[in-house]
Length: 225
Figure (spheres, helix red, strand yellow):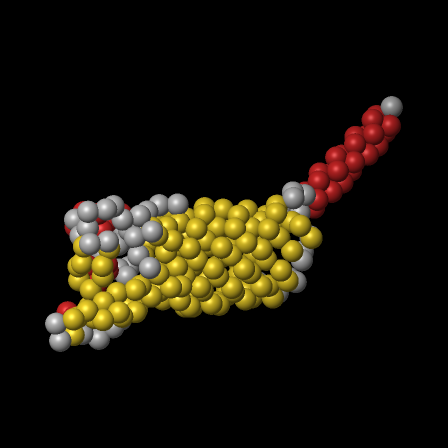
């Protein structure tokens, strides 16, 4: 009887260990790391200014939790970018105003948490999630800044005043990632939920309120580890 009980106990232990091991293997979460870089197309959507989108570059790094038994993965990452934008302005020369395209450069750092829905497993995902952004000033790149101006309705002010935009912003990102395990391509559209021109309203540059939302397209290649 004791021998039978012992054998039964061993059999139950083996079944339990085997089941637990199978469950563990089935639900193993794999962590990955990715480095990448690419190009941006940047604009500010606003009724106050006449803007023209410009190109730039980005580099990013992220860590991903690959969850095999779920329909999604999750990643956390940081992205650095340098973006360019043009704004219609005026050059004051010999007592007259001449139309002039003003060139601005914007450096931004973004922290993102993205959910990656597995459209085609290990090949194609749809990516969506929030971003926190810190950006520097919108730096005027034209020569002779003292002679450059911006007109909003009947109000005219120095172009350099536009540099002082809001530097903390909240964005939303949506895109897609395509590729195999080691090399992937990612396209994203990033929209700014917050008014990044809000800080200009403290200056009383014009009688109307400034309002502008970031619009950013990114195309990047990723190497994953």
